[in-house]
Image 1: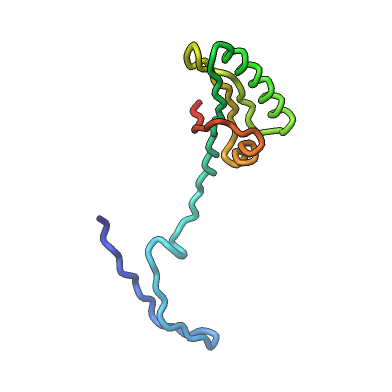
Image 2 (image 1 turned 90 degrees about the vertical axis):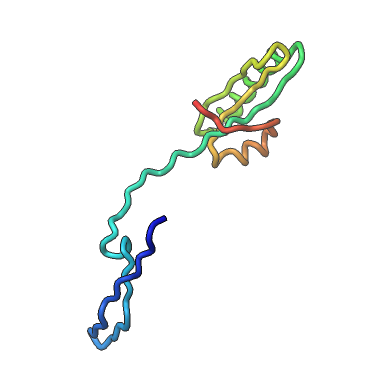
Length: 120
């Protein structure tokens, strides 16, 4: 555990008829602190998922993915990742990947069954 540093006291000074009592300087802040240049963190990507089950699941999910692609084109979303994925013989998903900021309006408009973080 790091040791807590007690602030150094700067002596009282008078200038332009202003009296400064005690000014404390915490190490790492003030004039010694260098501006941090950090890149903006990349926005999370969320995969919205629609589940289809049964003997016609594959064709239904592929058809749903076509409509998802049309939605992406009309609403001008930043990401264009749409598709379908076969999980098993009787379970296929259609998915759409959106950014975190776009997730709520898209979710409310399309009502997916579930969602998860998208990993490329």
